[in-house]
Amino acid sequence: MYQEERLRLIIDYLKKEKRISVDEICKIFDISRDTARRDLVRLEEEKAIIRTRGGAILPSTKHIIKDYSNRLSLVSEEKKRIGKKAAELINSGDTIILDTSTTVQACAEHLMELECTIVTNSINQADLLSKNPHARIQLLGGEFHKEHRYLFGTSVIEKLSQYHVDKTFIGCYGLSENGITVAHEEDGMVMHKMMQQADQVILLADHTKIGVTGYFRCSTLQDIDLFITDQEPDESFQELLKKHGVELLIAL
Image 1 (cartoon, rainbow, N blue to C red):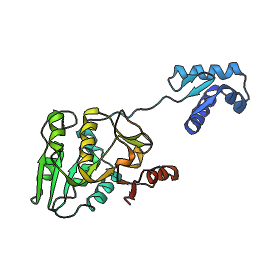
Image 2: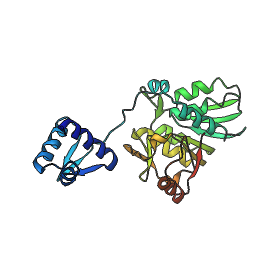
Image 3: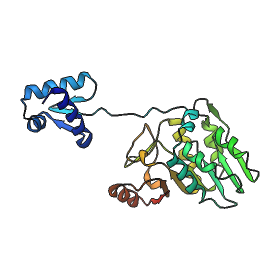
Image 4: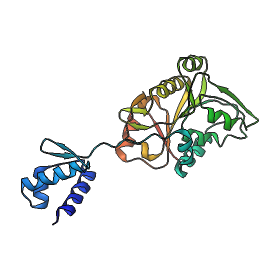
């Protein structure tokens, strides 16, 4: 077997098993330890692996957080389904909080005729919902994040403490056993307060966010009442949700 083919198979193995040892490489490909080490050196030079004592692992991958306009242009059909399902849970006369995520905006797009009161720190959400003649909109004032088009800071958090709403809708960077995480601390601090001010906290996230942990944890799983996603999570993650009292809803 040529080295190039062996290297590809080593990467395939790592994608499934997460790590590989020199001994395993020798056994799988019937090669010497010196040859196995040369393979790992080559993969490391190509930045395809991280060498460890006695083997290798894959480098961690981090999603690049695009600015809000770019993220809006990439809103998937899955997120649109999640947003529509979330909007079905809002009743006439409800008071709600909407965070800044594009999945939550997909929910806001279905509120064009509903009579409700909406609290948000998102410039885009407020502009979109201004087209609803029946909506009362409270835009939280604070420091403006130009790239992601939301308002943040102590003034936003202090103002939020004055509200009590029926439902808060949030998105996230990832959800895992580590909790609900986001990419920016200032966003996460506001989201944490939003969750505290609601009778029901509803998380909207597509299946790609499951098992992912981001930079800043804004809550634990048990702070979430309902999780709406587009695909049924695996059994172990469903058990994790059940353990923390999170109800699961699939947007088909």
